[in-house]
Image (cartoon, rainbow over the protein chains, first blue to last red):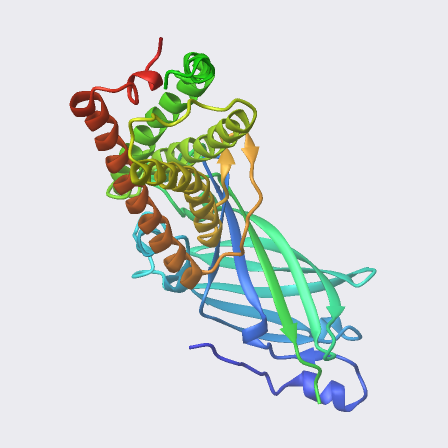
Length: 186
Length: 186
């Protein structure tokens, strides 16, 4: 079940004052994907279920924010077998840690439609700083499209420990690609 | 048969060329390897070994495709021996049909495996060196269909190889003609 979340918040009030901005996420058009390397081979995956609260105000980044809850058991991989493996204790341990969480602490305008979203990413009981560079564009229907990718080190979060810790089998670096489509605020 | 021209042609074209023979038996060897690895790998628990076997299976499959392209190119430029005069017309037609279908399957099956791999989000890197492009985007439903297609085509190939082998043995041991020996190394 995909959820659509909105924050009836500061954003609305600022928009009422004439700020252009975006809020909420069009879940069906948005995606959280990742590419890992297994024995040198790119292997793609994604998460089917997640929710996000996003308030994006280019004119008021201090009051802009993004937070995500990702249901880790909803992982989409090559096969059912690979997905069950990923839910096990040595990987995400979804029984104990069902949700990964990202919350932004600051959003910086670096020019040219590019932003840097800094925040904390918590997975499997480990919280680390993460910076997600994003590029903001508009699609044909006037939605804002925020696209970014960043690299996490899976071993920082103990994802794939014990037998799977060897980075020659599954690389430590995992590229996470985020594409968020944000409707214009009415 | 007694026509001198026919005899001359038969002596030239009674045997397959060394290249054709080598490529034929190389294909046979690759198929034994690919079937053995392919049937064994699916039952392995998710492990480094499993990833390695899948990689080998794909490398062998791509090699079969390349060798088949070579064989077809060779065949076009170097005609094989004529069918035996002693064979009834229906057998000649059947042998042409089986051979053509075998060639077709040797091209289509590796492609079906490659597309299947793409649809599961797993890149194919030939010999661990040459990354092949993803033919379709990751799609679980499509992957299910393509896997069934790959397995069905392989079942058809296995059946035809059995018929092909049985026919060759029948020619050798029952008809006692040169159909098998002309494909054996000199």
